Each structure stands twice: as C-alpha cells, then as structure tokens.
Length: 133
Image (cartoon, rainbow, N blue to C red):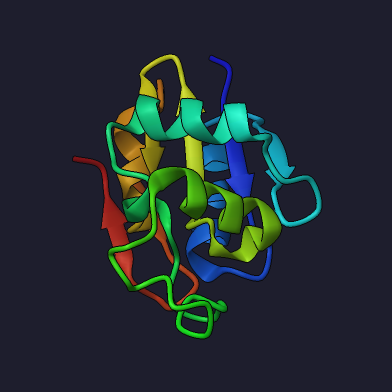
C-alpha cells in the first residue's frame, strides 16, 4: 500500500503518526510540508479528499493565526488558502493519504483505519498506549 504523510518532525502528533505507519510495515513517502509546501491545487485536493472545510485545516496553536486575524469569518476559502501557502505552519498536520482515504490524523491513532496492517498496540511519546480499533 502506498502511504504519504504530510509531516512536521517538530510535532509530536506527526511523529507518533509516522511511527505507527512504519510499525505497520509501510514505508511512507514523507513530505516535510514546511520545507516543501503543497501547491494550491494539491492543498484543495487534500481538503476535498478529507471532506473538511478549508477553515478546518487551519492550525491555530503556535502559528500566526491570531496575529493575522484568521479567526474573523470574513476570510474566504481562497484567502485562507493564500495564507496557508504564505505561512505553511498554518496547515494542520499530519495529513495521511492512502488508498483507504485521506485524513488529518489528529489524534495520531486516526491513522489506524487508513493502514492495511495497523499496529496492534502502540506507545506514544507521552506514554499513552493505543490499541487497534
């Protein structure tokens, strides 16, 4: 199975998700989206595939979200995408793409349903134990 993860190595949730993918036996294509941001077209494709709104993909914590006033409902989807392209840190993560679907994997165990051979048991960095669903 082909697996792609839009990953931020500084994010614990993203690291846990990547570790679960690897523990399942898959070696994913890892896209460090802060270094290689997706194109506008790819970002819109991911939003559509996840079945979420553009606004739902915005990350608030640790980003310029508040300083840019992005909590104001005046922003259109196109304008929000522009901001994510200008400031990739605004893109919430990790996003995982497999043949089973595309998902924002928050929490990290949301990846389990996307894998052919999900982990039976996984211990997150913080010690939390996750079991297969």
